[in-house]
Length: 408
Image 1 (cartoon, rainbow, N blue to C red):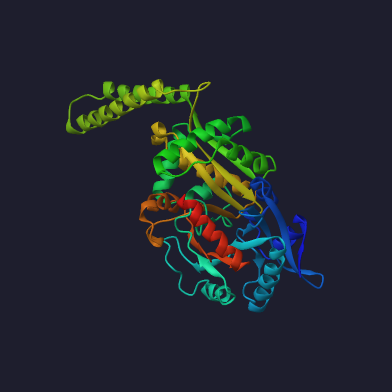
Image 2 (cartoon, one colour; image 1 turned 60 degrees about the vertical axis):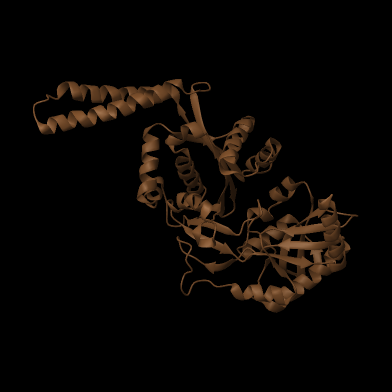
């Protein structure tokens, strides 16, 4: 029988089954501002399957239900899966739910850093057949703005400090981070009062990458539900303007001194002078930019990102950067500092979240994947999204009404 349980009961069960995730958390449930329940299949005195179910009203009191990265269940036991969803369907009907969307927290096929299938790796494709045999349909979410089925994940289990972390990155990524740190790029947590700054960065990112940005109140809710409960953090990258101006001025002085002290007497010296002049021109241009760029209280803010920290996992959720300061490569330093934070909190799994590229026929987003790939990790293809038609008659009527409404 399906029964309501407390979040504490659910969390204990989810931990035992190693399927704890932020989208099944009480913080996520509260942030959605929807009706929700933690439901479980009870056999004897034991929970054998459970999940967070949120409800969205649609028409005439009927509702859609969602269970993201759940339910938590041993999907390798077909009889248990059948019993769970049969009992769940009966229960959801009493709540006037006509449709359920869910996606189990399991990978479909084990893949490597390039997105290629690992030979003799984890293979859960048979589970899709189990679900389809029970009358469920796999839902194509390729063009959905928020639902995600491909991740890029880095295992931090064998990394103990910042130097080991840096050495685990690709050569280009290491060089970029070291150069940015030398320029004085720093990262710190953001306060709630700085959410407008975060929203400003998100607007810039939306304009560049053509996605729909959320409202400021959305990010304020994220902060209140996750940061204030120690399950999230907003990080901002910045540099101190005068520090950078001083850095470039010192570089200019060094090269000018080198030129003045190097006699133009042979080919080797002429090459030294030539290279110094090239650097000199570059540093002078950068100095001019640094002097003229807008600062706030002496600081220049480069970009920001939001992360979830939940149990064993840290998730890079979203970010935005200042286009005119992109040469400082703030996203690299933010990721580096976020992973350091994960290690400090004994978090072993770092999830770059949504990832697309040539490997899943989305070449337009391959550049973002290459950025993540530079930090090391593997591509994860999840089992997928599935629908359970709880009340087919009502579903048919509501789909018809939606078509009519869209026509008008």
